[in-house]
Image 1 (spheres, rainbow, N blue to C red):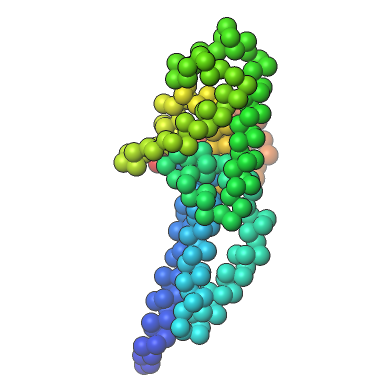
Image 2: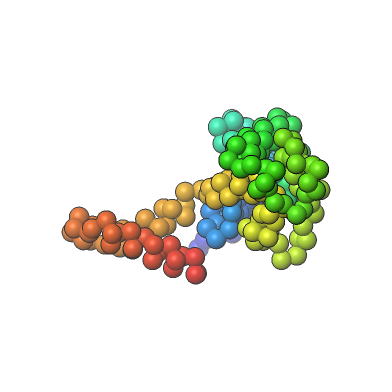
Length: 236
């Protein structure tokens, strides 16, 4: 006959499951393969950090020790986990980009972001004769200067998308003509997955094949298999 679990142990185990759920939620969020995820990295880390701080401040010694240990690991790994591209992706999410201010060095990231936009604008100016070919009906002709990107940034920072039915990629498709330089950067940055899980799921198709089949498959067939797998995963 099994002895009954003491109430304090049962209560702690329930808390532990809830505590671990924060990590599972973070992983599932960053492993999504139908929506951009790089813009979610910093908010997810911040939410996880807040959860660990709450645990570390618990009056329960065991909970506090667990929270403190996990928080130390997170703080140790953050410098190698966070890259300026994560900040760029968050800034390129007009619904949530104000969360960038939660970072201690957010002004540094913002300066780098604006410098990147300027470099894209400079390249565009080299390729096009602005006076003859520049055609953006959203910006008056009198503002077509070498600092036109600053006006674009100013207008973008004032954007307040409707949270209901918000779709980040759809928003950029609809606003790419209003923010041409930013749209170019968005297409580069937001296409980067936060996790390699989606890619690994694609290549897991090979595990369904026997060694003999894998060794004899031609590159074109392999490409078609992976493409089919990608479409299948997307439709699910």
